[in-house]
Length: 159
Image 1 (tube, rainbow, N blue to C red):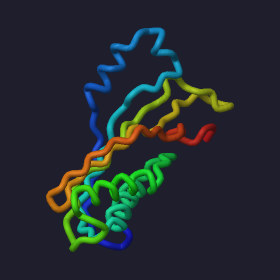
Image 2: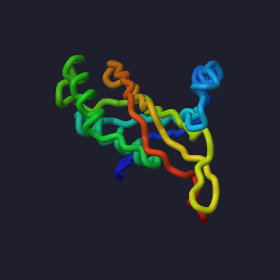
Image 3: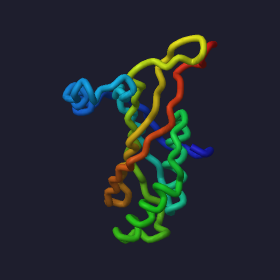
C-alpha cells in the first residue's frame, strides 16, 4: 500500500442473519425497489503504523485497493472516530511502530428489480454499512458507520 509492504486479503462471505432478515419482510415492504443483500466483503489487514496519520492512510489504502465502486466514505468520517479512540485508550497522536491488524467490512446489495437503461434491463449494486475493526498495541477499535454507497451498474449499460 502506497509503496510499502503490508498484508491485505479480500474475502466474500454470506451473513445468514442478513439473508434471513429479508425472508421475514412482508410482501408489501419487499417492494421491487427494495435492495437485496448479496454478500459481505471483508478486507483483512496487517501493517505497522506509527501515527494516527499512518492508521488513516492504511485504512484509506485498503478501501482504495479493494476498488469499492462508488463507495464514498470520506477520510474525515473515520479519522475523527479513530483519533478520539486513540486519545481515550492512551495512544495519543504518536507512538512507536506497532502492528495494526484487523478488518474493514462492507455489505453488498443489489436493486430489487432491474432498471431499464435505454436499451436493456440491468440490476444496480451498492455497498453499505462499513465497519472498521482492528487491534493496535493491544487495544481494540470497533466502529460501525451507517453509510450507503451510490448505486452503480455491474456492467456498462448498452455495451
